Structure formats: C-alpha cells, structure tokens
Length: 177
Image (cartoon, rainbow, N blue to C red; front, side, top):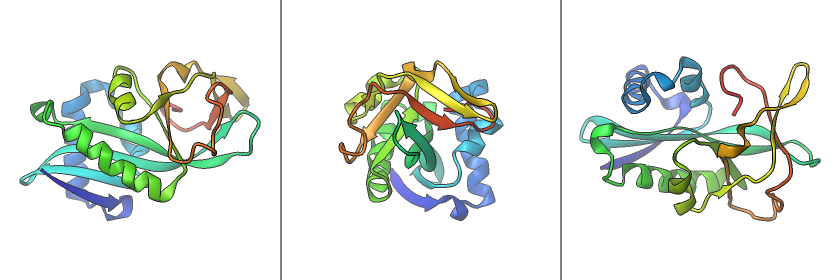
C-alpha cells in the first residue's frame, strides 16, 4: 500500500470521482454531497493499493472556540474511510498515522466527530471531548448535542487544557460538526 499526501487544490477530477466512489462503498447512503464538500480545503492522505484508492483521510482548517477563549483555527478531520474490501489490513491506521504528521506540522490541535469509531481514535491518541458542544449560527450560539462523538488530538496540550468546557464551531451546510 502506498500513501500519497496532496493538498485539495491538487486533487484532480478523476481522483475526486475515485474518492466519491470510496466514500459510497465505505459509508453507503450515510455520506452526503455536503459531507464530501467538507473533506476539501486542506490536506488529504490517499491510500492506494496498486491503482485502486482504498483509503482516505483529510484535515481542513476550522474555526473553533474553546470555552471563553478567542476563536482559533484547528485541523478538523473529515471523510476517514477504508474500502470495505481492505478493512482489517491497517489501511485506516496507516492513513491516520500519516495524517497526524500533517496535522502536527500545521495545527496545535485537531478535532473530529465520530459515531462508532471512538475506540479506533483513542488508540491513536485522541481524547473524547467531555464538555458540551454548540454551533454558532446566524441567529446565535445554540447547543447541538454533538458532544458525545467529538474527539480532540492535542499536539500542543497547552493550547486546550480543559476538555470539559463548551466547544463551539461555526455553522456550515450539512452537519455542523
């Protein structure tokens, strides 16, 4: 398996099609066009077996507020997927380990939202967010109930010291987190 790191503006049309096909195989109808859009705007790690795309993870810049601190830009992990035919072969592990290198070079903190995969991310050093989560919308800041699946990777632990404060993201189309 080969890992390739590319910026979003380097992802050509054929690779975008292959990514969409991968996400459809990995997530089925749980992955919307808006979810796909969220994956772009940062850095991608592509896992290839021969000429087939079998894994992906990206990190994009997002503005997040931790408690009453000023808004800060962090890396936000999106669209982590492994082709079902290649699961159990450490594709996701190797893809995320490589993405961690990119995150560490760009941001002091990364976040993600997950459902079933909290154990996978915990083994990679991610921590569960213990505080409430909110979204800043056009009408104000509203609790969103996402906190149960939010996780943080603290490359610089002094950047966020308290994981129990309220964390707020800016709204966007589709899932805010």
